Length: 147
Image: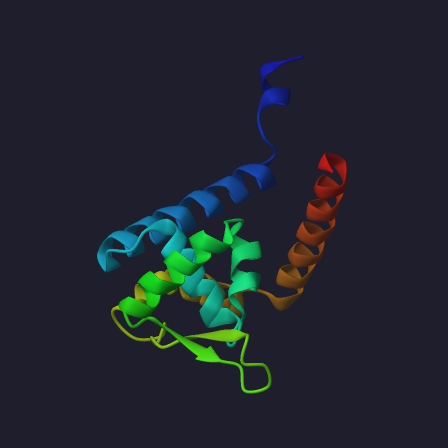
């Protein structure tokens, strides 16, 4: 096998650069806000899934029930999340983000994604759709290969 064949494809290399840039932006955001990685991921999930249950968050993050309770307590204490009793079933609590991720200082968590979305909007729509379809297909194929 020659050296050129061991290099990642341009698409794989581009995806790695994207992941690294997004990760670096989130690390900087977490440091600016003084939150850990798990808290930031939880807040982004809750903001995107208004009214989610703690069990859904636990499954998404892959942590224990006790861990998600502690995490939610931290976010409630920071006034970033609100825990409400479900009106139909009082045994259930629902989580709601109380911070505006579109405003400072919390917008730092979504700044990279917002800028990336703007760049996509400014790009050729047909190219974006083809790339999205290709990524979905390749991701599904790789997921099947590892399960």
